[in-house]
Image (cartoon, rainbow, N blue to C red):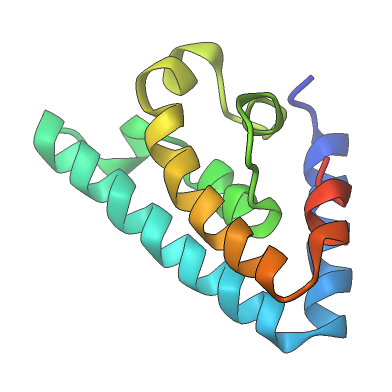
Length: 115
């Protein structure tokens, strides 16, 4: 379920889109920074490092694939039911914001292609 093939598929989709439109890369980078800030804030509030909240590789894949649902988020490597139950909806708010921005660019095929 959360194996390397899912990560590879997500990365190849993201790479193809980024090469086709540099605006996609810019949205992904802004999403990554927003996710990282969110995870750091969560970690700070709990007295733990960001990596204890969510694996940083998962944050990277989230920013590349921009999941809009719990189902899509759960397909990302390192996203477990336990960490999704605790932090998933909070992180989905961030990815949905950027996914909506991407949809506004008339790029919904990218969102459907993710995972």
